[in-house]
Length: 399
Image: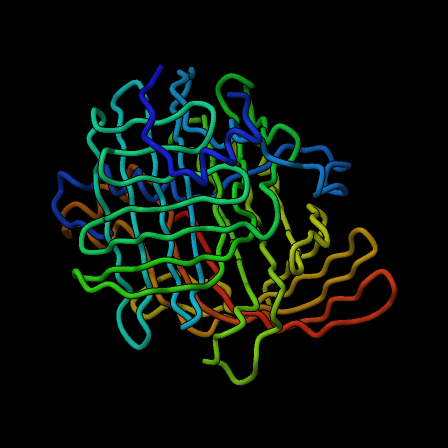
């Protein structure tokens, strides 16, 4: 049994109730950074269409969020991801990951924070394997200094990466969610599958953020999820789109007030051709403390593209979403207004090494933007709400 870090009293109470008693240029860092980018890729869901109709019944038990010490026949990545949109419009993204293959094993973390009118801060760190301790029945992991832990409706992220440090509490607005057992079989059931558990589908976020030792209080809204991927390292999704928008009530940096009390989360990807290029969709719509609907059946259409300066590929800057589920109808458009981060390992390599990498390896390129979603939500009784929501959008393409 792996040793577990201590938890606070609030977490103990919840457990007792639920659970029976990028940038690095040195060549020697290229492989770690490349793996980190692969592990940041969101993944898929179990497939049973009827499960989408009952989001309140799809409660994710604490053990589905635990890191694992299991061994698999293929390479495995085990990761936790959290993000937040703060009341001042800034966005935070954090990932903690564990990668295991026949060749090597690695623990690591990254932390990204946008700066109003300034550059995005990005930091990565390796974590010594011997310092990591985690529980096998809930999300609780520590390296002796930093920690991510929680259960049921409350989670805490306390982590430092480089000159960035966060101490954030996620108080869930809706319950942890999982679709069935969370498992998607992509090929051989023992060699190619993915498991996802969303421990914070939508949460109020409070705490502190420190930059270069200067700390400030923050609050906003966010989410968090846990993923296990078992497959060949080279078989990552060739295209992925992720949108998470919120009605952050105190943010006044846009032309009109946001629609408070709503959250929309969208994740749409295509599996590797070796797995049949299967589309893997997910759409959440929540209001106040309740699920309105979840669905894997919706229409997503790209309507405008742009090419980042100095890059040779395009990314969508406007796309539409249409969905009908549980008597609700959603129709709207996301518009990317600020490209705040591009992560492409090739741009960080020496010129002599770039050509070699491009010959032997495809790699994911991340384009992260901030923007707004404008649309209409029609309820089963026929009433309509005009939505104006704000948040990040990530587009990942393999080149």
